[in-house]
Image (cartoon, rainbow over all chains, first blue to last red):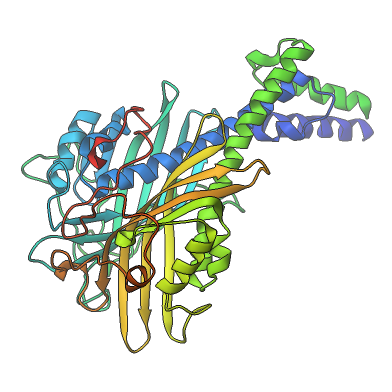
Length: 246
Length: 240
């Protein structure tokens, strides 16, 4: 019996040490200084990665606002992808550079407002430290000459990759969840999303079809529940008669 | 029990990939690596400190705590908001903020004054002693029963770590893109309407004139980026 317990402790201890890399720093002092330094370096690198990803996404928003399309496109990895609402998926930095022109010319045109806020990040860096995911809240303020202003809100679910030591966006997916005419407001007006462009069609159709408010689609969560550890990637979606979803 | 522990550690050692740095290091090498890590942690702490500092500024101004807001600056710190010009030093900054909000300590009954400060992109200098940051401003301003406005702007600020190890604001520059009446919204702003010099700065002139000529919405204004594009490392030209 005693022997059995020891074996059990051994298995548990081994599993705990092997599975949780960040927990290394709480490992026994008997560890060599070399191993402890390496473990600390890993943890520092994860924190640096989080900061780099947060800057990267904030900068994406600042460039996107002002139609600085070259600077936006350069933030993507070579085979990165870009998906905005129901416009479909553009793949590769050069395709993205051109697709961005669907949002307006290079440099914001006069009397246009294209504010895309990047807020409320939840960033998760992978175990190996070479990739990350981020969920963001995206409030939107739009304007074009001769039309009412537009308020919008949505969710970003993005992926990031460290390419040659530099963090880049490997996949950006903005899910607008509600759009409205400024004068009417969300209570009286809900606007649909733009569809796929006929002028410059995407490489792939939208990865998920859904509607903005009054629909209440749940963009799948890249991060697991921080307390229960449960995945929220595959949640039941609200019914939609056109899609045949019950 | 000791035996179990040893066995467990041996098991873990097999299960974990050996990091390259796990070779035997000299005392000097260990110290050098620890120092390098400390410097990196200090930069991470600097980023947190800068974020806290700027958010505190927003929270203090929100509630009319002019003195608390001014105390966030270095002795030679500057503030520049819209077309009001540059105010230098804590005393001048405090007085300017106070006059900008009606001239009293705190807020007036019914005064809406939310300086929502969002989307930081923080760049800590190589030596870890200074920093720059870009922020988004979403102002909700007004006076109950009288008027209400949305403000939209961009901050490009500078920060400095003092000899005492405390981070302070060296320069705060809010490029106001527009101040739009809530009811009519931003879409109906006419040229020149979105940004005017405040009455406060006319009555209490700045130490220096505005550093740029502003082109508020519906014109296009791209506040210059202090930080380079993080992916290419090149300056962002759109802001010039």
